[in-house]
Image 1 (spheres, rainbow, N blue to C red):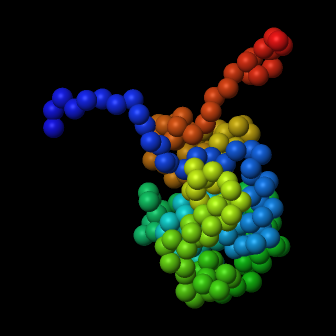
Image 2: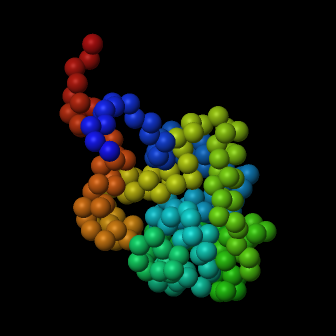
Image 3: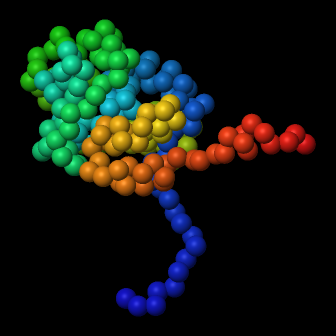
Length: 200
């Protein structure tokens, strides 16, 4: 095709990070109504695990509760095999709240009965569960299950974690991929605009 007319109209339906004020609202509702869904969201947020095959096919044996790492099998990964660090606050929740270390290592973390089990969910189950709760709460459709991974990335960067550490946690093959990923998600605001703008 040649000489196609350009358009300035853009329909962006990509998942957007969860806004700060909405994070606590979601947490309060989802933790109570669907603890397993909140566990899935937490894996996305803390470990940057993608909600497709990486999360759905995750097994108890993939989690090293002593070293605090998660192994993402290369067969299930979008990129390569990854060993992901588990932040201490989440590792404590996995042990003390979810007690995942007490289950058989061959079980899927996200079993069909909403506890670890021998059968995993279908590929859209967690996504549909999140969308149902989001719609019931009248939250924007730009929030998708994948939004929690973006939210974790942005909050990690804003807390002072280096871009190279974020790259490793994501399993990106180059720093440029991570920078492009963050540029599309992070809203850059000048601290001078925020703190020094003269009052009207």
